[in-house]
Length: 500
Image 1 (cartoon, rainbow, N blue to C red):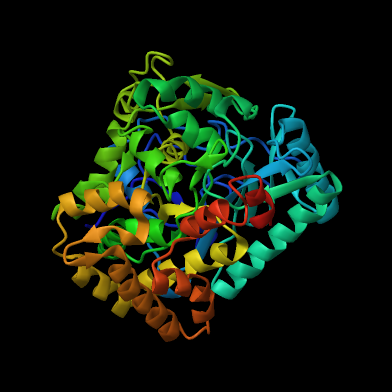
Image 2 (image 1 turned 120 degrees about the vertical axis):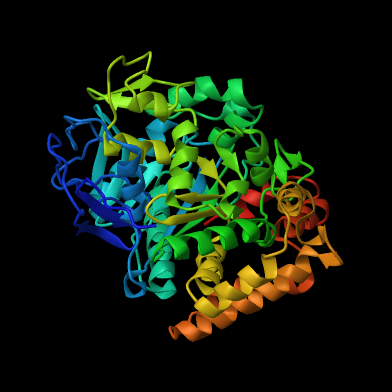
């Protein structure tokens, strides 16, 4: 699909900070301001002292004529880039806790950690009003999830060696500041000990809107917000066809990644019945914005079809005059027609579109790059293994084609079955004449071969998951065994076992 954009947009993906992509034309009556750079999740970065909160104000793009659907499609198309410019973006969340009490850390403690990191390691503060809500440094940023989960959104990097070095540097810094305050960080997919009522709420405007809305659309949304941690990998594409192939491969294999990295078996001090409770939680968070996106496998799928989907996903908010306006229940399509009840006559900018795309939560998400979203949080070696898994599969043409061939005849019902059963039974989930473990063995071999062909000596990063796939025993099952034996059914030991 050739799209002649009528906007001059900035190409931003995990692969480049802010490389302008010239538009094919410019519409009269439309003022376009070049957007400042973003991190690997598309969040704006500004230079100088403290920076404004993300999302940014409406001043970035001033519209004198309404956006069209063509403009929204062109925004996604602008992410296409040649293979030599592909990069790897990783994001990982972790639970902060008081070492003495194991209790979740409160905002005041998190603020002190952020200030400590800023002072000692030269990070720049991100402010929402007079409250520090994150940090940025170059193309990296640190942000807070709703329950205080501490997230690094990494820079777009060329090799897995760089990615793992970035993870190690971040964990060293966080540990150096946290230890002096009696604070540790836990690599797990779900809060193992504390109830929802024990989790502090972060003072970010958008989270108040989400907190009020979640119980209206699912039973597990608040657990998702306050008690889960994930690891995510962001990858580039060269064209619409390349995006489609990677999107389909990523969706089909997301349950395999969920199984290999399953690491959330505890809830409120005891086993919760799942190997990946975090993954299960997404099945009843908000099905208007989550799931396996069956339309991606339609012959008609492309950038335009994803835009059609996103236009009808209910909005959370718009950001105007440094305030979040609750727009829950309205669609971006309504917004484009000036029909938001909460902001009558207000029309969206590309900034609003970018923000809206971050409030959609399928297993694979399309922005100006693709996000693989199926894995639980875990210890540092696994933080390096997950990007290795996806890079080996999706950045090597031969491995990618093998995956597409392998999954070509999987039905929608089979993909949904894997999505729902893997969180319970992991690699032991039956599939056709075998088990998910059999699939994982084949997929892991393809990932290793893909990494070998890249030529960066990156295969070693998959060593962490070799035993998981060989034995069929997930990280969660290892934790459950420790719980029943060495730990004598006391989940407190997991805080030491998986301490960063």
